[in-house]
Length: 164
Image 1 (cartoon, rainbow, N blue to C red):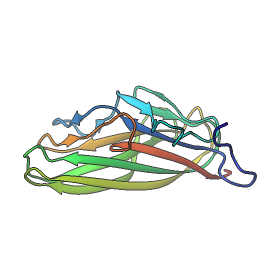
Image 2: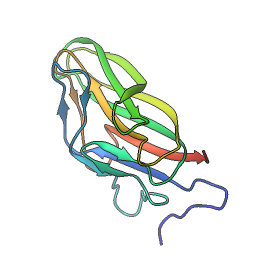
Image 3: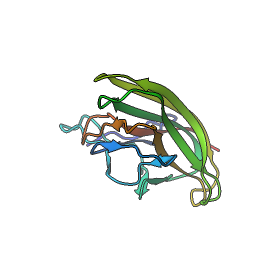
């Protein structure tokens, strides 16, 4: 039962969501350090392929070496705040220490509207103990990044597309 890797096809695919709303503060970047869960759509609508990612305090560890496409998704609720510089970022480390922004999406908020940001990057994971990623956001005026258990509002998707 469940989805399995197809010979010559995708051998790793995983999706994680933030399960509750997150409001940015004055620090930059604001890492999503908690409230992570593997996406669960119920009724067998989503199941990871392969081993899947592991997460600890918002830091994701890869199950195997290879080239991974990583997509970040941020759902914004302007919370009656106008902000001309709302940022969603993917950060990575190659030494399990200092993190560098490797993908960034920018937008704005106004009034009571809702918005979405998307960013994508390809990372060559040459050492699973050293190469890690995390999701971040930034807003100077307290924009809410929406979370939800199950459906993807704010989250991250990992797809292994080749060998290193």
